[in-house]
Amino acid sequence: MKRTLLNLKIALRSLANFKLRTALAVLGVFFGTFSLIVVSNLSSSLAVKTAQEIDNLGTNLIVIVSGQLRRFGPSTSLISRSTNLKPSDAEAIAQSLPAAAQVSPSGFKAFPVRRGNTVLKAIAVNGVTANFSDVRNFQVAEGSPLTEEDDRLQRKVALIGRTTAEKLFGQENPVGKTILIWRVPFQVIGVTAEKGSDLAGNDQDNQIFVPLKTFLRNLVNKENVNIIYVQAVSEEAIGPLRGEIEGLLRLLHKIGKGKKDDFSVVDLKEVTALKSQAMDLITVLGRIAAAASFLIGALGILSIMILIVNERRVEIGIRRAVGSRKRDIVLQFLLESSFISVSGGAIGMATGLMMSLAIARILGYPVSISVLGLLAAFAASAASGILAGIYPSLKATTIHPIDIIRT
Amino acid sequence: MNPLCLMEDVRKTFRMGENSVEVLKGIDLTVERGEIAAIMGVSGSGKSTLMNLIGCLDVPTSGRYLFAGREVLGLADDSLSELRNANIGFVFQSFYLLPYATVLENVLLPSLYRERAKDGAEERAVELLRLIGLEERIHFRPNRLSGGEQQRVAICRALMNDPELLLADEPTGQLDSRTASEIMNLLVAMNERGKTVIIVTHDPAIAAYANRIIRIKDGVIVDEQAD
Image (cartoon, rainbow over all chains, first blue to last red; front, side, top):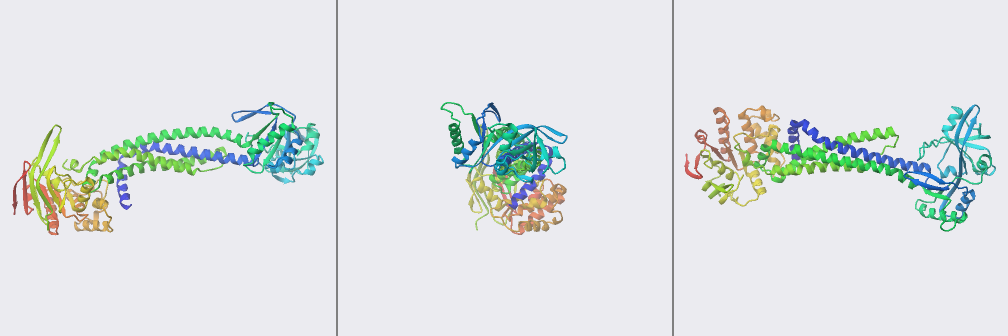
């Protein structure tokens, strides 16, 4: 080990003669590790972000939407409407399907909301049941949550989001105050905790929650809901539960064989999977760029190693004369070439790390460092150095002491 | 005790394209342990080729060469390396110190390839350099030393692994006569300490330091004389 270090030390001093060439040779490996690190850290950040969003939405969640959804890439659109989804469907699911832990039907519509002279033109108003806060992971930051009693008695009470509260009340405490939704006065009983934007990018803090019955009778005057959220008892239960829900709803809605559903069941994991496909593409492109950089880097190191071996013919001859074996020479030059590439790689890894931290901060993504990415970058830079060193180091062994003495 | 070098009818042929040239045409040579000998000859006489064979840098085409009782003909490249590393110290006309290594690192070079690492290699190198009066300059680069000093460092390098044979190829060819005699005195002193020394030269004044002069001409030894 000590011997190896000594040889490396001597080699580095001779490398100082070719500073610019060495720097150029290292550039390829630098960019290779740089792009590998950036891409792998970003995709790992995105994975964490997506997982957070799913958690934010509610764990093990299945969404039943009235009407038919059509998917087009990551976006979905409602292609047919239906008024068949009823609170009674939700009850039936809750009672007959044991895999459904919680069921929360919900209706929504945008209404103008007023408080004094402040008028907000269109705020999403949701009619929800009391278990909504569990199922959708909405916490109450101030005041009190909606209760089953509020729903049963059709109380005109409202939970409002943080953004809505600020728009209507500014710095004032909204709890206990009255707001006008459309033409109906509601008493604000609480403010929900901040959640940020959802998968589609909508601000989840700019909406209002009222009891479902109040919503249906006093605001929209309808019997049907838009959505039923079902929380499965476990992640494994989601798949089978989907099928059971579809079967039950077809039965309840009297949909004959061969007829199309008037509802759609969505597993939120599928939606987020589509979103990560876009990131996968970026990852693949980044890896191709990294591979190309490593190739260029390896060629650069190959050329500088050929130069070094020619420059040090006398040294090699002397080393052979004093007793180094061919494999000692091969090892020495392989070590030198991999040292060059790994040091370039280390710089690339460090700057790539800083770059990905900066990007994560700008995009507001959580910081996640991919250990696999670091390992891959290190391995790739070491491998390109070793591969580039094979030919020059074998060439070095053809130098014989008797060729160089007496010249 | 057997002689250090024993050559019997050693021949060396080089192929030059279609033709082959026989450079050594049957050498019989014995070098005893503790001798100091000079090999003399004009250029083209085959003395370099003979030196390469004695130093185990090359192997004979035919004949027998026993070095320290070991047959050299047929040894693999790795075995030749190990033989040189343990038993032979080289001193060259152009010194051949590594320009990017310090004086100390140059002296340490043979120890880097010893089969078994020995503790105290660095202490030994420093001690050798102290003996020749260069202990002040162990961290210098060779280009900051004079020619004579460089050759003394090269001799230290040759002595590093405590070899039996010091093989000096025109060791004073690039030195002025005063420095040359210093170097020769150093080699003689090493001989007096028990090293076998072989000097290859064309200069009679240098050969005069040896106890024995081996003259080679056209690939054969023409005259062996002891003082």
